[in-house]
Image (cartoon, rainbow, N blue to C red):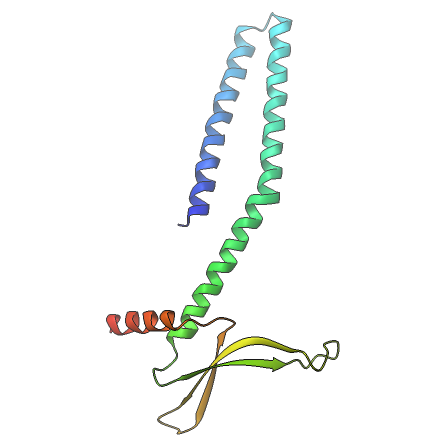
Amino acid sequence: MSEHTEDQSRLQESLEIQRAKMLESIRLGRILFKDDPKVLRKIQYRELDMIILENAYARLRNRFINPMLAWAERVRAKNEAYIKRVSSIPRNATIRKEYIRCKKTSCSGDHKHGPYYYAYWKDPTTKRLKKKYIGTRYERTEKAKCEYENNKSK
């Protein structure tokens, strides 16, 4: 479980506890002070405060927390895909940084996109040159770490 989901669950638990305490005090107040209109008015204000707080939390969650969690999940998925791609590259591969010419008509012809990293190696069985896309970033230390983990597990 990531830090963000732990923080969100802790926040959710504390809000639920506060909500339960508030509901209990409202219920007890309605029972104890059913004949006192001033206290009943205060209880109604407290109910309104609770509704306002819940709405504010929902807006906060929808506007900030949910997009942040979605972004963190996208980053995690990209990193996992990158590690999977890098770990499947053979040891004898050559890494090249390439800039690609865009095929879109809306993109200018002189501008190249990139850098994109590709691995090239000769397949020992077919004796043909193989090419594999790595990603928009490549760090040799990560490749070494992935190879070490793969060799360690074998």
